[in-house]
Length: 415
Image 1 (cartoon, rainbow, N blue to C red):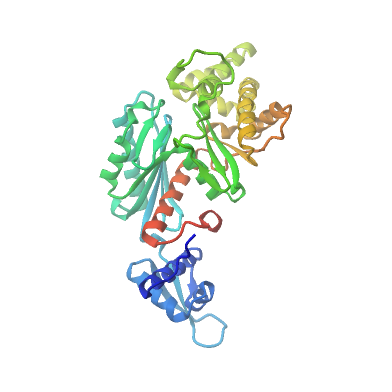
Image 2 (tube, one colour):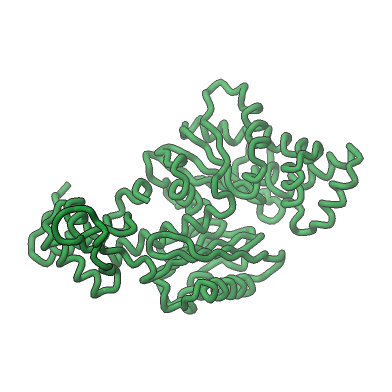
């Protein structure tokens, strides 16, 4: 590998400025002297960098620290102006659209969410998302002119290089470049589109220090099932960028090639997804004479899965019976992933994460007879917000790369 050196004065100043900015962003404020010591540069070099950053509106000099007990002249304090710009993290699923606004330090200032009804076309979904973004920006007291970058996660197979959704059975109206194109036109900033589970995996590792494993699989479990794979500390995408699409595993049935499942579900999703969980819970409630749960499911309509998951949290025997059945089936998928990838940790995200320990206990019980040692199992710390946090992370990384000139090393460890 070739060694990068500062071949000229201008390049040296850019490298120094990037180092100063990186350190300053990690602190609330620092004195110029402390900053110079931390980055290993002279006070004069740091001052030049800070003046350049102040001209760009990225740093601000504060008052002299006259309360300091140190001898000599008072320290000059300086801080990173995280409010100088903002980023967006967005997620779309068949159930809802979520929006998060964050400043340049990654601090979330506003979140919003709107339910999406079944049967909405692609244009309707996009319009709903844009109106939710507009409401979130107004609440944050900013406009689209304050946005530096936006990232969005969707189900399906996505080509991030061109912002095209290649396959999205659960929301076919979004196939193509409609979403990325409309967001760019409206927001006026760069827009990145990626698979929701891949972004969720990055968001989980970013926000939860305990999930910063270098070998993990995060599974989004809801109506659909997909996985984000981290190997040797890096997100693994596969040759076609759809590694981890475990919903298409066929572990239970012998079917002719090309057989289609309801709503475009894969064979695995058909047996463990939200529709099946609702069906199993209703059947169990019927056998147990649990009219209250049956009424709860019927009244929920399109939100029937959420009603069942609430019943699991409440300890409903019929709902727990349904979860135990799908956990037995789901354990077969975990065993396959373990046999191929052998991750240290497997995180359950998405709607099923709400079930918490009862779900994990059922999975561990059904995995106990496996001949291979199984990975540790945990539920997502962010649950259904993992996608928007991963989208925020990507937006901040792109700003570091394109506007701050910072290398992407250490993002997960340094925040």
